[in-house]
Amino acid sequence: MPVQVAGPALTGHAPTDAERASRLLLPRVSRTFALGIKLLPPKLEPPVRLGYLLCRIADTVEDELGMAPQRKAELLDAFLACFDDPRLADTFGDCIAELRANQDYLELVAHTGSTFRSFRSLDAPTRAILQRWVTEMVRGMRQFVLDNPSGIRIASMAEFRRYCYFVAGTVGHLLTDLWREHSAFVGAATYERLLEDCEAFGEALQAVNILKDIAWDAECENAIYVPSELLEAVGSGHDTILLEDRRAANRAALVPMMELANDDIERSMRYIEGIPAAAMRIRLFCALPLLFAIATMRELERSDAMLVPGGGVKIGRAEVRALVIAGSTSALTNRTLRWLADRVRKRPFTLTG
Image (cartoon, rainbow, N blue to C red; front, side, top):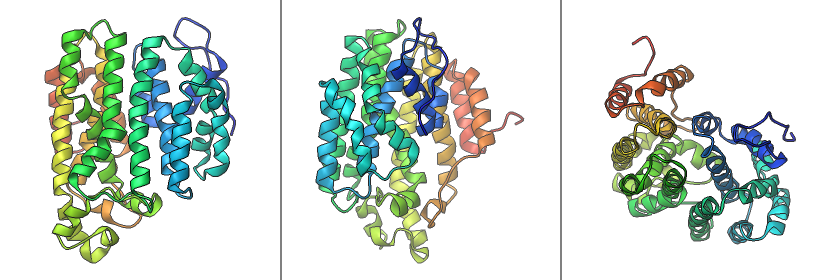
């Protein structure tokens, strides 16, 4: 389905066709992110939106099941070259002929040229931030692709943490650098404080997503991120991760990953607490996905559905809606945000109690 034309932007100028396209593509590839990005100040919305879309284009290539690893590496190299050569960006979308992603992601990759045109309309410091951290992410993806030619299989907790850094810790840096560049409320001292936990902020969300989607990743993406060293310690392995007679053992193997995710969630709370209250829209943008992650961890700790073929763990839409409403006020202060996070950890959150 072709991209439609959207309404005017709130950035003080008429949106270009490329901007309209990127705004309409975003909710098609991530409804949750599209919801959160509307909360950001007008100066931050375009670079965060474009940063996300650039990451998703690379991720679509990395996830392609039917493509040889060396070809993926070539395409990822070509994608990075688009930062410096507009002609390459305009032709990169031709690679959709080699992809078997769903229509929304094919449309995203097909619009690589327009996404880079919007990227080039940003100011030079902002472009430098996006290029630095997207490049770091893509180089890490490329190495994992080449190191795992038969599909990603994580061997150790150290490798798991390295993977999470490349695909999500880099995003924490990207966002933090954008806060520093575009928010008057994030000065040098605040920026240095945020750097202490910015990687954990991205990695917490990634770890929770990996835990909830174990079965999906194994069955549909040919990827197993649970370290083999954890499975082997309980008498299991990657080839038995979804077997019913190993489910209890496999569930026990996840404990160190859950502990790491919870540690990163706590550091993510500190990250948000370090953002000044005056930067309320940035705080809310960060708080909502973290609240969703805390709710998902609550369900993961009570379930083994993520280890059942065809299964997975997620929170209900009613709780998502309630957290959006409650988070819009609770994120204003550290005390109320802590209260809401602690409440979500105990039971599904509703507006009635």
